[in-house]
Length: 51
Image (tube, rainbow, N blue to C red; front, side, top):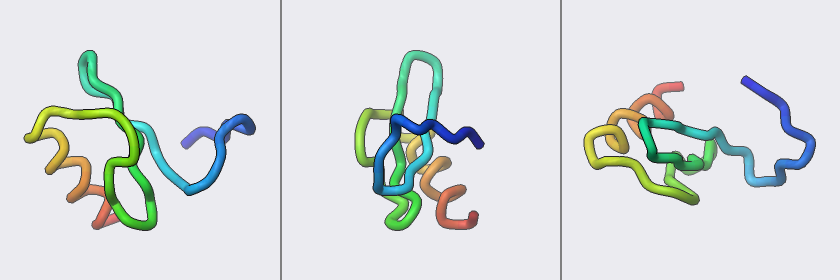
C-alpha cells in the first residue's frame, strides 16, 4: 500500500490490469473511475469485499 499526499478522499485503491486502470472505493467496493474487463472486475470487487 502506498500513501500519496496528492490523493484525495474517498479512500480508494488503484487496480492495473494490462492496459486497463480503475479506482475502487474502499467503503462501497464500487469502481469510481476507469474500466476493467468483466472477469477482472468481478474478481477485484469480490476481493475488495473480503478484505
